[in-house]
Amino acid sequence: LDVVSLCSSIADVIDNPTDPLAWIGSLTPLTLAIIPILKKMPKTGKLFLLGSIAICALPPFNGFISEFIIYASMFMGLECDNFFIVLTLLFGIAILALVGSTAIICFTKLFSAIFLGSPRSEISQNINSDTEKTMLFPMSILGIFIILLGIFPILLFNHITPDMIVKITNS
Image (cartoon, rainbow, N blue to C red; front, side, top):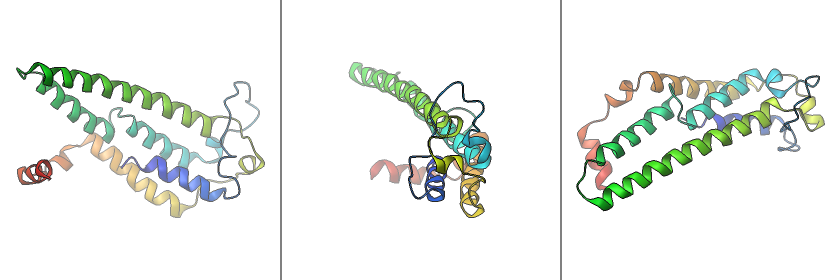
């Protein structure tokens, strides 16, 4: 479901086919006179931000729920008597925390460079409207699922049966 960021990126590239990377803004602090792309494409920007926050596993979105389950299972595994398993789990917890913090830094930079920076090309300066509705609709559906599964994860967990878990672990 964190595909919303990818979908909005693809939508922007489709809207600007001549030079896909030329529309990315630069991070210059004193460019208040130039309108950032977020003001020209608010729906796409908000959906991109929603997907980015979900990928970074921040609450209350679906990425947080899945990462919480991983952390909880790793912490429960620390009760094991085997030293090497405990050491591996501690290493895994540290790596997962590092990856999560790196994702936050990456997507903060990405969002600010694309949507908050000053336009670098004529194409980005000439954007007058948001992405087409046919592209916004699928992103909006995925955004709704991101929020719903983050706030109500029980909707998904009620459908997971022990048989499914056995099939996943044995495959």
